Image 1 (cartoon, rainbow, N blue to C red):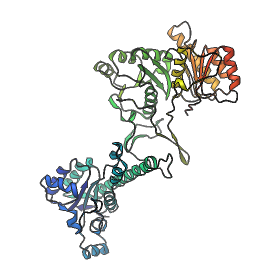
Image 2 (image 1 turned 90 degrees about the vertical axis):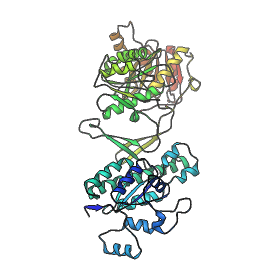
Image 3 (image 1 turned 180 degrees about the horizontal axis):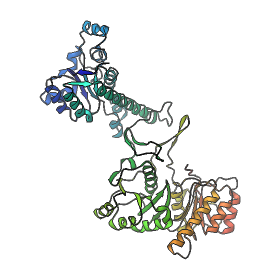
Image 4 (image 1 turned 135 degrees about the horizontal axis):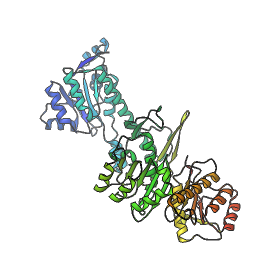
Length: 530
């Protein structure tokens, strides 16, 4: 393994030409001979540089619309030859192959071509062949060849050359080789994903190469003894918490990201609705409300469970104003997520140095397709994301009494929230606000009781004459396997119920609902969330 390798001859072939001219000039000033291809050679010549065409090296013209230009022994021999191997050196001399010490390559914009909605033929033409071959050859032979695939590394390369007198160190070459192999792996992964998902229409292709990059190391995971990092999926994907602009506050933790994502996913269900506020604690909503303004919605959401809201995450579906910001800073809050915030809101939040303010821009589409991945011992579980939605037309009334207009609205509101509550989930709602939330219990009866108890506690704290479960609608994320959970809801004061239906005891549950004078709606869809 050779420590320092002088850079005498460089091959440049890039799709992304940012920083190319400046790099070429500095390499030339160091006495490095430049070899290039097609558009890259033209860009370097336009910058006034002397460049040898790849065809001058191979003694073979570029052909087939540029598909064949660098796939040649005089290129790959110059990249792969070990300079300390007598046999390799003899082969280079016999076949007139000159060594290439530096390769600057980035690949055809495959992901960008797919993202812009290009036709299949254009997508196929943006699958790079020669580029990855040169990258892999150079990276494999990093003992002697330096490979750079990212324009953001140009300055680092130049600093390395300056420090080492026109050479690169083995540590630098190893680092660049690792990055190069990651780049080609990600590139091939995106191509494989496109072929499997889009071109072949396979939900679960035989091999699933998921590629991620741009890691942000977090302070720790769910607990201090765990390590954690945030990665961004390569290629096009929905924008969310991972892409949000953080205006202030300390770095987000693993739990902050997880909870903020839960809050954003839920508030996005209301992106076309009235001003809505979601308050989340430990990935479960503890208060959700819609109103005429974000301030009004926040006050109603907070009243649902002001104890759990302490140290929670807030997400809103409208830009924040000063009045809402003033109210939100009244208690300790970890994170506030909003599409935007006006100058007054920003100034108010700025006084709370530990509060993180995240601006998300447009909210993600709750109906978008996607895939969820969960690791288990020895494997991974994959499923399509729960983008199931219902409208009033999808509902079936199974009781003698039909719901009123307000009960119908509250049923749909409660159902939307219940979709984002950990199972077993029970949600009471009234007048566009949650009244009580029961989450994550091992049986549905306990979830119903906990949600009712929380509603009573909220009423006592607010000084209301009765809990907001009186006259409310109640949603269950899955069917009632027995009537006991429904009876608990009746005892809490609910007058309407929305649930999937489908239990072998549906008739028993419907009979109890009729006896209590309830209106009950079946959705035919459940929303387990584990």
